[in-house]
Image 1 (cartoon, one colour):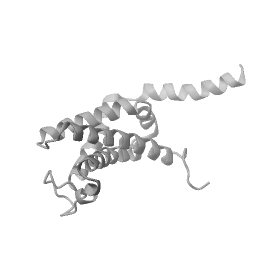
Image 2 (tube, one colour):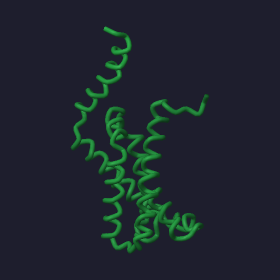
Image 3 (cartoon, helix red, strand yellow):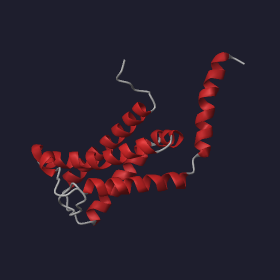
Image 4 (tube, helix red, strand yellow):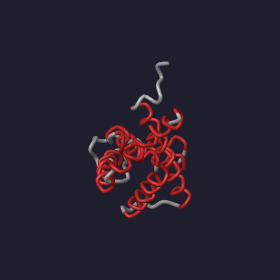
Length: 160
């Protein structure tokens, strides 16, 4: 067999085999629990929701330096970025690889469903602020997920 073809197949087979080993219900359950835990943590430092696990610590006055629109971007980024950090640190390699290949649709779903839940909880937002929160959440979620995964598995190193 051609050596180049062998290298390609050696790269493809573990990926395909890993996809078959993924139990999606189990993976989504893990991601839901991680998202719930990180949501409680992030909402506990947001004065609007009244969840206080960390005393009176509040990030809003830091995020408001650029006005309410920039605050929404930072709030969304912090909210979904924290979930992405937990996911990229806790999930095993083969599950994280599966999530990474589907990062945009999974991130979009997490951002939209979280935004709907925040609205249901009574957080009124103008449409422009909704878009700002969504953009911050989606981009930070994707960036944190991809860079943390790369650092964790040695694909990105700052020691060189």
